[in-house]
Length: 184
Image (cartoon, rainbow, N blue to C red; front, side, top):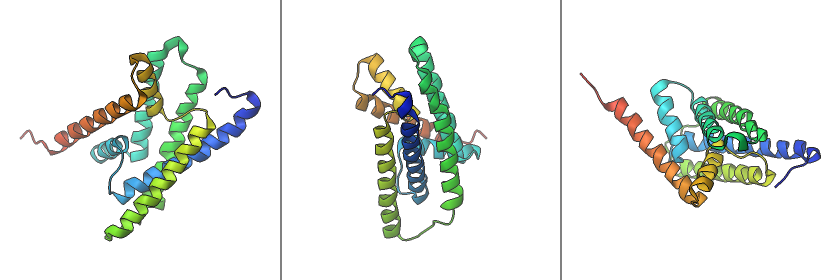
């Protein structure tokens, strides 16, 4: 979908609103600790090893994805895609704010309450993702990178995205190995 200059501000505001909802949902899902996506689980694993905040780890991962996009597309890379950088910063900051400040006291021993919260945060995250998709602008760096791989490898996006999740899970096991393996 091509966006005109007149539509740009409106679409950008819609994108930002969706992004904030995705970040709130992701922070809540991670805080409830009943399961999370592979990318967020990797960010949590790296955060636990390095003491870097989880949103900041996600920001770094997103910037790596953007660099991969630039390397893969080279001259075909559209400057508008560079908006993924401030989008990544906003997402990282929002996740950190909600995970470490707003949701800091959100600890419940009740499995039922945690399940209800998980359901609520999944709805929030899904709604935010739908808003971002409807804006037709930027998208998230991981998905955009997977889309480029899918086009270059002539594979379905869903399969490439699943392969990315497998890579993230392998990286989680590598992180776990380094945390738990003692040389001496």
